[in-house]
Amino acid sequence: MKPQALVILAITAVAPAFSQISSDSISARARSVHESAIVVDTHADTPQRFLDENYDMGNTDPADPGHISLKKVEAGNLGAEFFSIWVDPQTTTPADFARHTIDLIDTVYEQVARHPDHMMMAFSVADIERAHKERKLAALMGIEGGHSMQNDVRLLREYYRLGIRYMTLSWSNTNDWADSSGDINDAKVQHHDGLTDFGKQVVLEMNRLGMMVDISHVADKTFFDAIATTRAPVIASHSSARALTDHPRNMTDDMLRAVEKNGGVVQVNFYSAFIDENYRRASAAQAKDQDAAVQEFLTKSKAEGKSVSYLQVDHIEREWNSRIQRPPLKSLIDHIDHIAQVAGVDHVGLGSDFDGVSGAMPEGMDSAADLPKITQALLNRGYKPDDVKKILGGNLLRVMGEVEKVSQQMQRAGK
Image 1 (tube, rainbow, N blue to C red):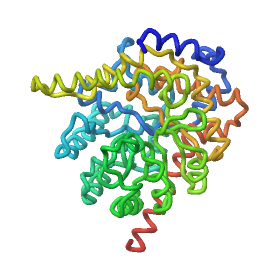
Image 2: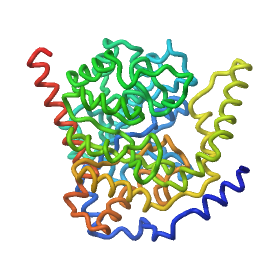
Image 3: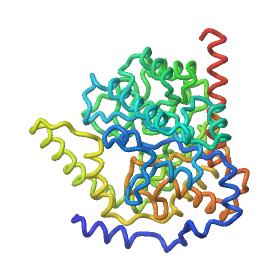
Image 4: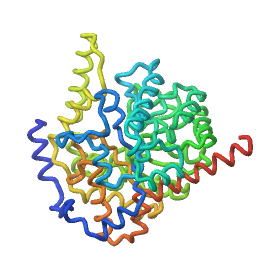
């Protein structure tokens, strides 16, 4: 199908018009609720920009397409951000996974050092609460993909010492000990039927350290193996509901109920292909051509001896994303609402994927500055202010606190 036809398909398939919430229409009540909350987002890919673009959080360029800056953070009352430490296995050799991970971690520390009046490193719930009182952005970090630890538990411990507070067991690539949803149907990839014995040891060591176990991206069997293994609540740092959008990255209702039983939290991803079925279908229809365009770029760059950055690939993907009509904000709120209905309001939060899915978020969600629109939309649906605050960040803080307690108990017991 030609790209022009894809655009027509996406536009005609969109649900009836939804009244968008503008920044000007945020009520005084919604602003009061939002400003009094500790807003926590568990996934932003901004470190890629720090490293590859020398991007600075103090950027005030109104034309900058990024989702995260100090100005946007302040406008959206974002209190804590987990910056994603993601090493692209397509553009980084396995021997360099750890080195590149360290490079990305360093960029977060450097941003905090540049802006000490506006940011602070945070490693615990207490740190996040202190940052909130000081009106600073709490900067935390999560590794996106177990391949970063290069099968070495000692390296996992070192990452914890450097400030990593969650690790996604796999990214879209199956690693040596955890199957991924991204390639689970690829016969050329060697799978493990979930977690290997070593993978289960990794989960337990994360429990002991006090590092949250993140099950976004993992294959369904990996998810259930992690739930059966962990001694602490898990998180899905950026996942949505499969009942509404049939994508393998999303979680089934059975998985949502398992997270509820585990005491964990599902942080809803804002990416349009994960929250809107019409967008997902249009994206899937052009996926083969989009992947071919990326592969052609990678092959050409390799033949010419040129190094490739994540942002160069992102630019290609952003151009393809722009060919599809963005869904309404309602699609995002529907996923929050669905997870709250199935797992309970104590088990849902926000995991935006800011700066990781440029140009592919729902209408009205253009940066961190737009987060108050979520508060307004939830209040419009009848959510009580205290429950809205749980969704905005309270649930994640509870889980993080429980993970800290389990760590203390395991270490006291010598496990």
